Amino acid sequence: ACHHRAPHLGGRGMTSPLPPRRADTALAAILLALPSQQDDSLRACWAVDEDGRISDISPVDAAAEVEARAKQGRTLPVIALAPAAATNVHALLFDDLPVKQAQAAARLLAAQKSLGSPDDQHIVAGEPRSEDGAIPVASASAALMTRWIALTRAAGLDPDSITPASTILPTPE
Image 1 (cartoon, rainbow, N blue to C red):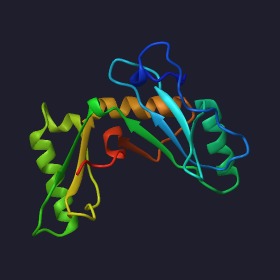
Image 2: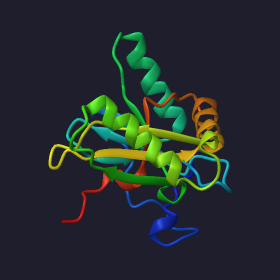
Image 3: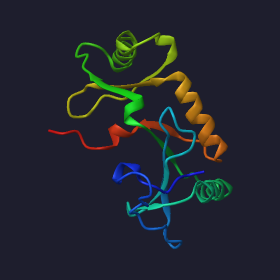
């Protein structure tokens, strides 16, 4: 079950400050807040409409929206946000390498820097950043990644991507 609480805004008992979803608005995406290592439920579910407004939505309603779009031959992206505390994010610069080689090098370097066995990590390297060409690389526990995927699928949602929550905010200058 999806909790409609915002622990980051004051802890237990504080309800979400977001409005409920208006039925007359078209959706652009579903966002899911994944749990920490100690929790076994989705932290929050949000609907993003085509105007960029965010509102609360239950996972049942979100799954129904995704299914309805699929029946129409359309997609509704589902983006799962991994807790910042459960992920490592770096931006690595490899000036003299082609993009694919730089991504491979970034994954290898992240594996070397990880605590524990690299085999126990899920490591992904993204496309070069436009501002400096650095390769973003993120890692999380492979076991935790497997648990997150099982949890979202049990809720009837299959995420298109799992993104570290810390990466959705603008980078400080």
